[in-house]
Length: 268
Image (cartoon, rainbow, N blue to C red; front, side, top):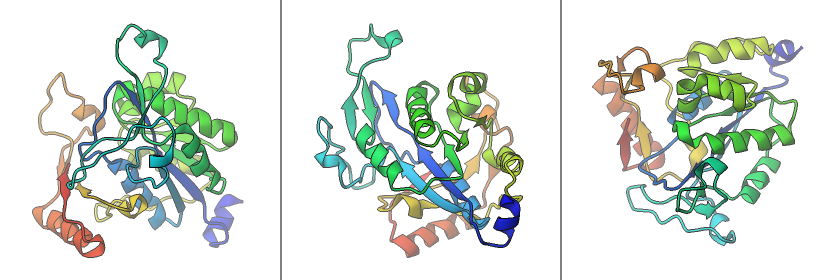
């Protein structure tokens, strides 16, 4: 029934994308954006999905400066700076570390408020960053599961790829994606009876409009690495090396400058 309605354009499926909190002793924003999640957002929109996004690390949330017991997110003109942060209890396995432990990003209350503004989604996609930031990922998934127990949660990103078995066992996500999402996500959505996604296109630009206002835009110039260093996870994240042409990169830079007057760019 879902497929029939979607094909007729009567019931556009809805996806909520979440960039989760960082739980750590220290974190600084050096042009950190959930670029992979933004590419997925653009891809799903092209396939007639309705997209909502919550960026738990949003440094420009208008209500955060008024939240109690929150340390400010001072920013530099080039977009780098501090995240909002709030002291939280340390996990038991880190109790011996003599430093404050923080939740970086929105307060718990504001995250719940953002969730309450969104219509019940059909699917929730959660990304993940550094492997040791998984407590913030788990916290987001737990909250979503309490609010919408029957909505499937799909987890991807760095932690989900590098620590796949750990994520499958402990994250409570319904599906865990290992590696580039464009390879696995279509089959997962088809299992849920959604229409087949058109192939991912290199011509897509990430959906940075979901993160307005923008201090800068991240430009992806390559994926993977031509080397295979034993200590590096690059080849686990992207098994093949791919480079965009200089012409394509320049074209994207001009696009963001002309559309949003962006003058600061971070090259990934």
